[in-house]
Length: 241
Image (cartoon, rainbow, N blue to C red):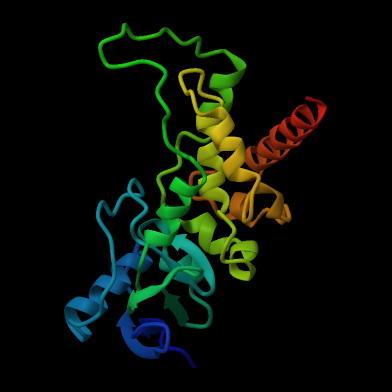
C-alpha cells in the first residue's frame, strides 16, 4: 500500500543515453512538480540539472515531460498528476538533452529564424510611428498568437516534429503567421517562401496536440491553416504569371 505522506518520483538522469532514477519525496500541501524537482536537487542530489526562472507561469522555462505529457512544472500541481503515488519527470521531447531535465533550445529557436519569424521593417527608427487599427483583420490574427512565450511545450507535444526533424514546428509557424499579418512587415514573400518549403506548414497533419497542450491556450493549428491557404494562393499566383 502506497504511503499517502510520500511519493515515488522517477527522474531522467544523464543525456540522451541516460536512464530514470527513483527518489522518495515527502508529500506537501499545494505542492507543484517544480517544487518536487527543487526538493530533489536541494535535499537528495545536488547534481540534478534543470531549468526554471519565474516560478509563476510567465517564462515557460520550467517546461518538462510529466508522465509523458509536456507541462509547465511550476503550474502543475502534484495531486493532479500523481498516479498511485508515483510520478515520472523527463526533459522535453523532440529536443537534444544537455543533462538530466535541461534541454538544448537552439533547434527550437533556429526554426523560428528558418521560418522567417522575425520582423522585416518597412521604416526606420527616424520615421513617425504608424498607427495600427487594433480591430483590423490582420491585427486580430497577430493578436491570436501574441501570447506565445517560447516555452516549447507545443514543439514537444508535436508528433510531426518527432517523426520529421526538418519540420519547423507549431511555434515557429505560428510566429511566421503573426509576422505575415503584421501590416508593418515587409517580408511577406520571404515568409511564404520559407514556410512552403521542406519542413514547412504543409507537413502539419492537423493532429492538434499543439493546441491541446499549449499552457496559454493558443491554437497554432489556426495559424498553420492560414499559412497553408496563403502559400497555396501564392503558388497559383506565380503559375498564372
